[in-house]
Image (spheres, rainbow, N blue to C red):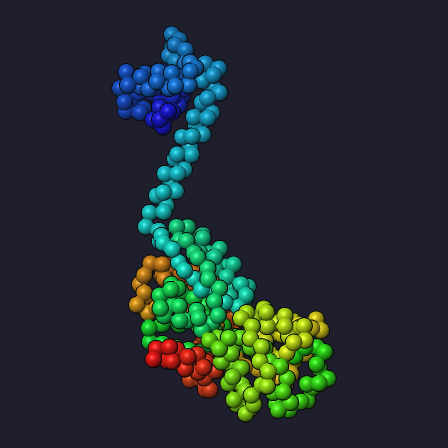
Length: 325
């Protein structure tokens, strides 16, 4: 059956007269009569009976009119939705993520993206910070979250918030490390992220500043794994401040030395794609999620333009330079 046949059926039912229904639909009476006959043949039921005053629905016609009106209404709703989508951004966004979803406000970002850009498909890739930066630079990711101070003329970086780290040790080591010197701390096993990560660069800068080199290093490729290994007594590590404080409150770790290292969480994309529809859509969503943040967050954004010294991400820059070479 065709949609125009259902519209004809509904119009005749509403008008109760074939001629008036034909006038309303701007078709000829014979054409409308043929539509009704074709619909009745397809459904194998009679929809109307002729009366002196016009056309009346049969019992089957009354039942089927409800379904016909539902289909007509659905078609109209589809037409309305299609009009609302005209000019909408459509495409596929490969988005790099890191840290945990709540810290980077990923649920809010995805919810906003679905609401504002229903035709934009988002593909998530969880990456190590340095890898995320390189993949945006190489075009393997359209955009990404990134934390660190690495910069590149081909990359646009939008600062979002401060990321702070402190030194955490297993709770069972509290007596061992309390008041310990940096030399004693260097004798303990350390759990570090891979060299390409900002986490590793921060730790290396900290070690270099105090002239130490850990005797034993254990590599873990995810900060959640680092958290777990410290809690299980396998070594010390730089741990994100909010997670470390929570773990300390639970008696899983102890915090050492009052160390606090900071860097920036940023949203990055390739500079030559600034006016790309997909990138602009992602930036609008990021701005909607992060711009209304607190005054302290605004201070972080402002401070991001001030000179930074020393550079905790130098290790990543050296690694990139070696790759380029």
